[in-house]
Amino acid sequence: MSERRTRFEDASRGPLVALNRVPKALIVIGLAAFLVGGLLLPSPWGWLALVVLGVFLGWLLALSWPVIPGTSRILRLLTVGLVFGAAYMRASGRG
Image 1 (tube, rainbow, N blue to C red):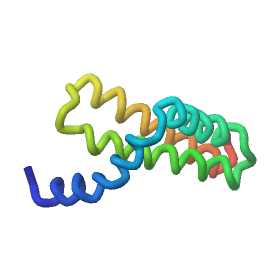
Image 2 (tube, one colour):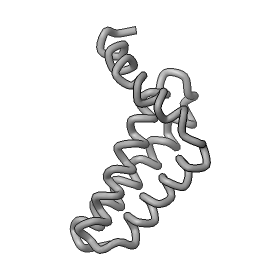
Image 3 (cartoon, helix red, strand yellow):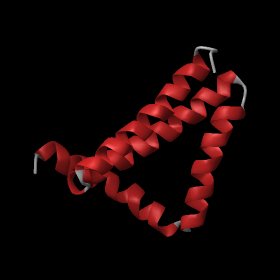
């Protein structure tokens, strides 16, 4: 494992421990709130909620990358890309 990967995982350890203390249902509700809020809130706030959601999902994807199979990687990359694409559409006023 590279030194950069080790530093990334070490830096993520604290937030992951904190997330593990939160009830799983609350995490799902929070993610859904960012998605729905991002799609329904007016443009200055909607795209920001989608970017926050995309960064969070990207962070989880980066952490799990070494252990997930190829098909799951593609689907998760597609999901993160769609969230950022929706954020771009909202920010540009087209969505």
